[in-house]
Length: 95
Image 1 (cartoon, one colour):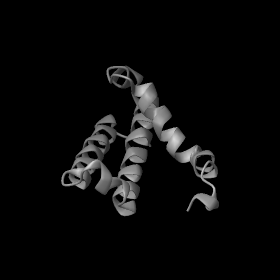
Image 2 (cartoon, one colour):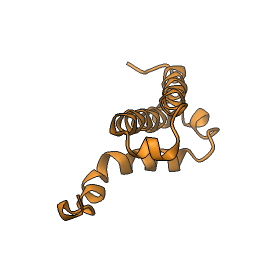
Image 3 (spheres, one colour):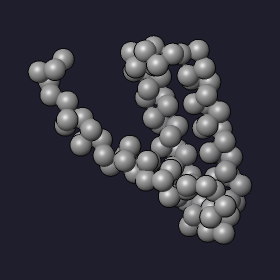
Image 4 (cartoon, one colour):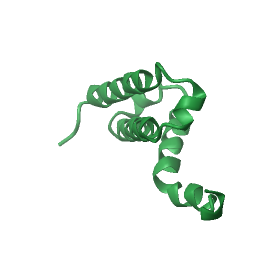
């Protein structure tokens, strides 16, 4: 069953709006110290990247109209698959 490309765009829009609402009242220092806000934003960025990745498979013509779509998808991949690399760079001694 093929998905309606508009559903992926809706997911992108809703996730972007959610990120905006998560950080609307936060400055950078507050965000850095708020692990729940960070996790929520990270999850929404993952959804955005995955939705655009799926859109590029279902409707490549429409996906090609999104500026820098490949960088957005790569960012999602880094969040998902680069986790071990990012976390490994922090040693427990620094905490």
